[in-house]
Length: 121
Image 1 (tube, helix red, strand yellow):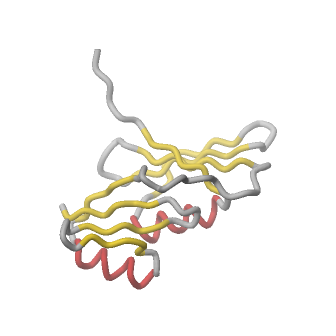
Image 2 (cartoon, helix red, strand yellow):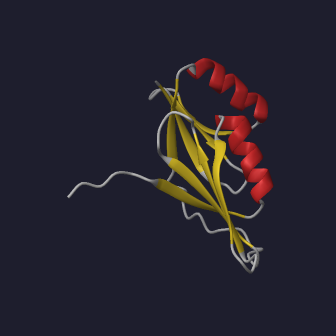
Image 3 (cartoon, helix red, strand yellow):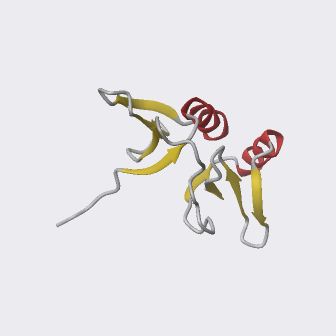
């Protein structure tokens, strides 16, 4: 038996805002859109145009309160071929939330408070 990664899910409060963030911050593009027949949820899959892995953003119509992210110890991680340019771009966006210069990495925070680790390629 062999398993391969398909996607990771993040639930979001403002789907358009989240999609715009992931497009601007990480260059992720929509690959699939699913709307419930009763409009109670929307699922959007985003991809990096390189790997088959997808980020699933789920919006729930009736959810109004922020999601409990605990201590934010779980996170996504992406590598970048131009780490310095990415860092400058994320600083300009104001989304860098944690830096670990000793390890050579940093984290950005999305509109819902999820952290994304940025790693040099």
